[in-house]
Image 1 (tube, helix red, strand yellow):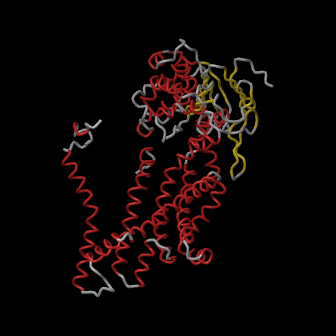
Image 2: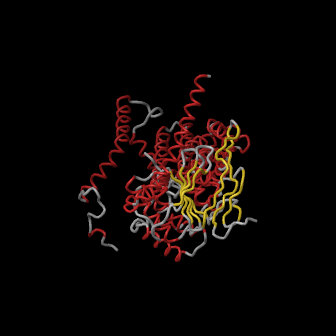
Length: 278
Length: 277
């Protein structure tokens, strides 16, 4: 089988993906090779449509790669599993379940006895600050609260790997700052392996141990930037913005992303021009 | 505890005093009855001014007396019982057939696309249009009535179950599968509750259509039921029975719909916040 060393949790090897459309196959990503170490927080930024979500869906096991293989703990991924939890941008928690029953859903599926389940859920509800809202339905909560429930639901099932696809994109800016800090602390405390997709350069640098930058479609990973950790806990925005090295890294990532966006726009203009002149 | 009356303000969010609240609620209910009262007044007026013979129109009070008489002899109850039993048996069978069928079709994209037009087509052929054929097959029996009502009820249930299943976001299923759920679990925890509000809409529509089809079928089959009551009264020219029967038919529909099906629908839809106004 693979010779991946014991510290690598997720290995993406020779991944390429095509989508079937009515006009034939469309290439979603270029060739991607990637290793995520156990306990590492990897963030991925890139222009829209570059294939970020495709890569995440493949790691989650929702789609089968056209080419290449994805390994989790050395075993090829063949479908979704509890060891790889997913938090989506849009809300995937169930509107007909209360906060408590949503968070405990993974435990319920795993057949954990009710008493133990309730205990775990209660602890998580305290942790995400939703005490008193246990019996509310998602539509009775604010956007930030709902996203907390979504994160807690994934956390409760205790996966080794957590895949997040722009989980805070739909939340208001102030709440987002808090949620980012909370997530950072939670990850640092639980040593989860996280793969996190975002549009925001700041978010990517703030949360990541390593930031990956993808090119425009068909995307490949064009840069991998290590972000040093100042302490064992999570970061907070005040010290982050005051840290010149962090700001340097953020600027560097921003330049890489902007260059891709610029190139993509120029390409679009060229194509539009060609279409207009023909 | 029986001390609920000790805190009279607890249940009145508007801050109205209990007496006033009861009065305003009562007024609200009276409002619903105004059109009915108006109809009776106009009816009385026409009857009084026109001096119509009894084989054309009778007075409201005459209808009331006849219905009271039918009721006191247990005749009305018997007709009502037949119709009510029919609609509930048909509903139970239609749910048992329609929900699994709607699920089967809804969970398969190609089957759903292939059957959508066909189901709409069937909705165009009303249950009544099937009557001649079904009478040939099953004769003038309860089975014929039942078949017509089940057909009428099942089509909207199948259709709405199907659309309900198709409307459940795939994301819900993906999210649950990455929590370790298998196929059956996803159906039970995602698609069934997700489709339930739509199934309830189908049930409510179906019971409305089914009730109308039932009365029509009873008029032809003549094996009891309110349709039989009013159609039988026609042959003997009993206008009072016809009008009285019609009033009961409408009243029973309102009772079934407002007191039974609608509360059930509200329970599933409103609480989950799926009803977007």
